[in-house]
Image (cartoon, rainbow, N blue to C red; front, side):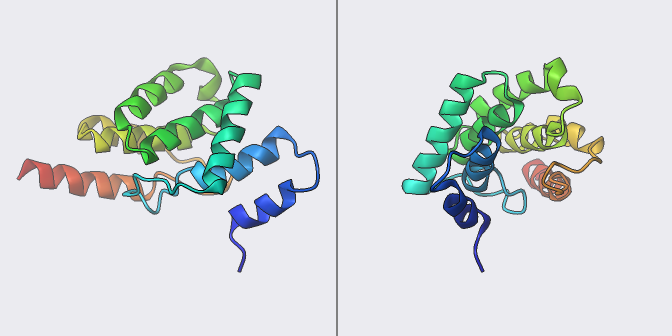
Amino acid sequence: MLLPATCLNRSLQGFSATAKWQLAFADSILGEDYRNVHQTTLPVNEKVQRAKSILNQTLLAEPENTYAKLLTAETAIKEGHAEKAFEFLSNLLKENSTQNSNWFDRIKAGFAWAAAFLQKFDVALEPSKISSRRTPTGRLPTKPLPRWIRLQATYQER
């Protein structure tokens, strides 16, 4: 079975891919898999470097691209920079353009995840309460987060 990153990598080779396809590839490498909320490292390999390059190029060309901004924050979390991601996602949640975005629930999930890593559990649980829409990929990213956050909060209280 081919993984999404492998399929997208193959499809990007040999033709001039649109920014959306390139970001989909970057997402498959750098984006968060909310079923694995404990991952805070990225492997050092060619795919990761290519995905980061695509993300940087997209942000230079389209600085207001919500999808690219979200991937930047998720990458920061995976690299162990939860404070940076928390600040970035806090600002992203305040932007008017994200309120009606297809990415809004995923942004809230990332915000909750970053807050939980910083042991700000009261803040982490708040955005997940109002998340109900599906992301553009069809996932409900916030579903496993509250349970994990509640467990962490309970453990910290002991």
